[in-house]
Length: 292
Image 1: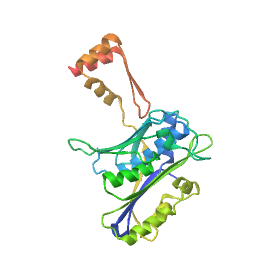
Image 2: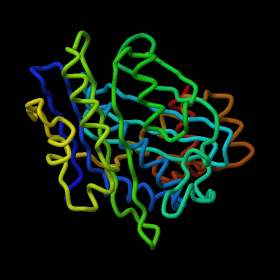
Image 3: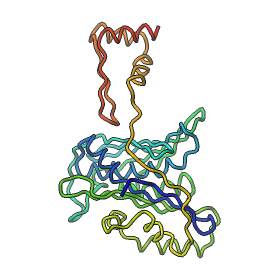
Image 4: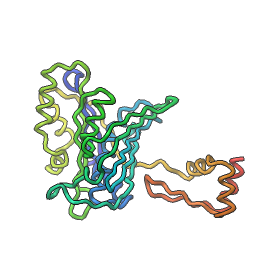
């Protein structure tokens, strides 16, 4: 099954829903960052959520960034996504190990600890929109549910999951977000709440062979869902040597001169994809000329 996000409406537009399958994307992130199982689960949940939320952005250059900072051993996670289903991310401490919550259940909340979730939307305005909440559980899905209610006044149900195989690779990954529009009839609300309450873990459903479409039907049973979009999703980092050169120029003449004089070289590292960009003395001098 390929990585994909499907979007749908139901109940004559009163409900909207997103269901994602993201195994390959999360596996690629795991391989890039060499994460432990609990770090993979935490990063994968947030990556999946970012793809879903990014699909709501209107402009081609719009970006959404989700940041978690906590006092647990993981310390934090940063992910960013656009409206084309492309996301990238990293965890601050990729090799974290914490005891399982119970047999077979990774304890993401213990790895993250207490802290905050910040969501930044860069939609071409003078200043990006930013909303922040204290973490409710650190399990990420519950925290996003609270964020939607508090910061966007949108009643939502969120499910996110990453299932790790015995060899620590990603066996299954995915998520869903279902949202109610204002003034939705109580009967529709009750039906949706009943559907969500009966849902198994989304990774268990994928492990049973269910498709995103079948999961959507379960979530919106009795509400006449209609699929409106299908978006392929993937791990994608847009760093390039040209962008890194611009970053070096942006630090200013004095700083560049200092690097040339003291180090005679520079290495810049991309946190998102682990690429390294090396510059020798001649290349730095050329950049200095550009800065002037």
